[in-house]
Image (cartoon, rainbow, N blue to C red; front, side):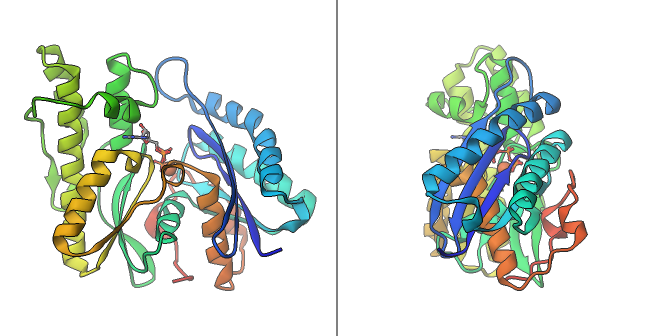
Length: 326
Ligand code: ATP
Ligand code: FE2
């Protein structure tokens, strides 16, 4: 049996257990998503959900992968960034599984995991457009780190979509629900906030709500939100591509499931004559496989696990990770 890594994702609403071989073959990708009954995500309730879901996710993943615990060579889990109670739940589950079966344990960065699973699509040295609930960043590798070239100055794009959808009574998660109705026909004028390489989305979502209250259709408002927010993200990505001279673009994060975003990014890449890589949707959203894969990448470079690697960190930024495996 080749090197298999189990990964536990538990940073916010998703609990996940994934298994992947050292050749990058995905053996299982089990997920359970906490959906709040009303309002936003409550960290303690989400953590309780994960505590209840994780044992079953482990069982299902092992069964689907046709593995025994002693076939597994590494347990990795998301060390951060994320919500404290959720991170601690994932770390505890990972530690329990690893210690009870005598397997090494490694905490890894959630954002870098989104990035590396995209690189597995075939990219070598890309600019990465990472759009999720809590994060909106344009990232590229330079001098030993994944550098953040541009990012949101206020809320993550996905959280903005979720908040808008909640306010108009569509429920969670808002991104996919808004995508379904984003038909136009009107393209409304909404704040387009790109400041240097950074972006802002809060004003856009507030203005969108005002447009709706002023009588514009939900179809037109949702369409306009997507067109504006995705154009901003693509503009910053294109600027990072021009600045770094890189020839590949990789998309990742839950919002990268959106077909219109994929289309806009691919058009931009085509016009620049570069390649665009888009992971399948189950690998764009939070998932265990990406954590497993990053753990494997790190260990492959003779990484020696330190005590600090297994301390959860709610504010563990992308550019804090020393990239030893590239
Ligand atoms: P992170 O910690 O990386 O910020 P996350 O906890 O937000 O991750 P993800 O699964 O990466 O989790 O992303 C979830 C977000 O993706 C939600 O805000 C959701 O609305 C958004 N999303 C999912 N599908 C779509 C879609 N088709 N269109 C737009 N947004 C989407
Ligand atoms: Fe995520």
